[in-house]
Length: 245
Image (cartoon, rainbow, N blue to C red; front, top):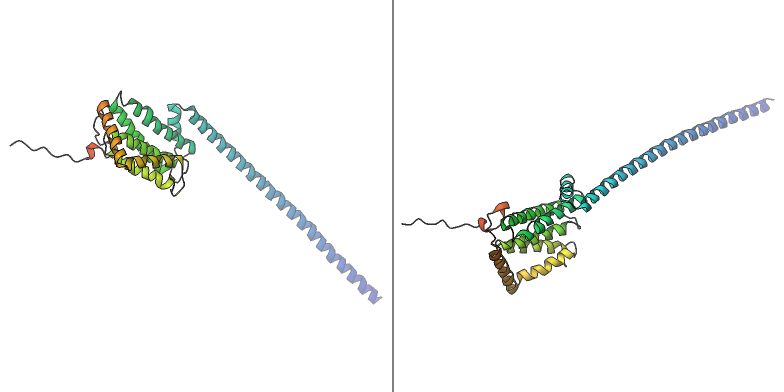
């Protein structure tokens, strides 16, 4: 009887231990399941927040591009002022620089040369700021670099000294976006290379200089008074007239 009683006790003890283990397993499964539910909820909430943020960002970007496509001076100015560092804002600033250069500058040289030259200097300053703000941007930087170079050359209609400034500006374009540029060839880089060859060729340079001289006389373009610190006539030291004895 003693042996049977001992065996029964051992069986009961083993059953109790197995029951405890099974109970812990069941409880552990419930805890793990609860943790999975919580983690899943957090993940879904995070994904939803990300989706809403992306959707809002895309909506704002779409609205900016729509304002750019509108193309009015008011829309471009507001876009450039409120979102100067966004892609659409940079595109608007480039468009405003082009308007100052072509519409208000070059096309008005015959009607109002003084005001046209002022607009050219504004365009030059705008492009110069864009070069800084678009640095390392393969889409906008070459446009800003080339825009600045073209404006500098056009200002030679007022003073031939700007041709040297244009040469340096074209070199800056080709250094990064020319055939052997550090970034790679672009249409802007190819244009700059072609124009640089013409400006660096002696005979071609003479013809270009003569053309700007003729335009200066025909349009009666006033001398440069040194606005914006440009290397024009006003930046050159003039001899002080001597008094008559």
